[in-house]
Length: 134
Image 1 (tube, rainbow, N blue to C red):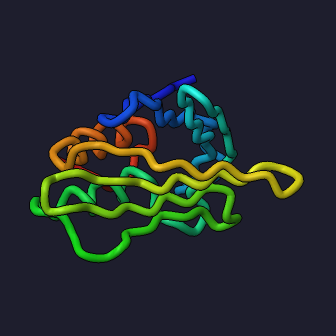
Image 2: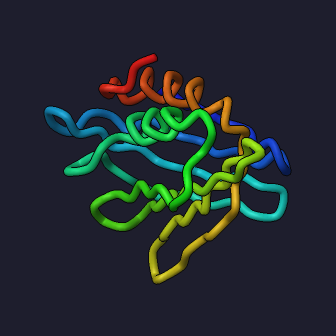
Image 3: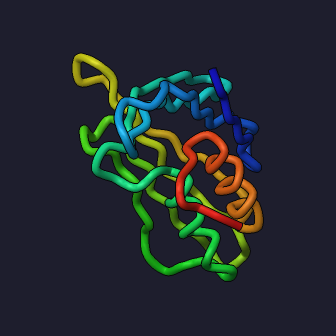
């Protein structure tokens, strides 16, 4: 089982991607976990009919000075939603929303530096085997 972890530059919270295997051509199942000091959440997700998170992070890395609007990745079943915003100081904040069973959800602001997005995309590409490249 392949696991990829990224640590928040703000509070040390861990954003974790856990490989769930290939289900069919071009589709990969995975689990996203958020492990913060006071919270832990997990949601199952898939790349079925959506771009991979690796492609999403690669797209964000294309903006060396950040961007003005929200940039969103969400799976088809709405189990996971990542909404990225950036400021002009090079900080990126992801609103991570994980939906669980029985209408439970976790919403968390996870931060990183703009300059780390390219490395994150490359690392996720190893997990997803996506089209993202350096």
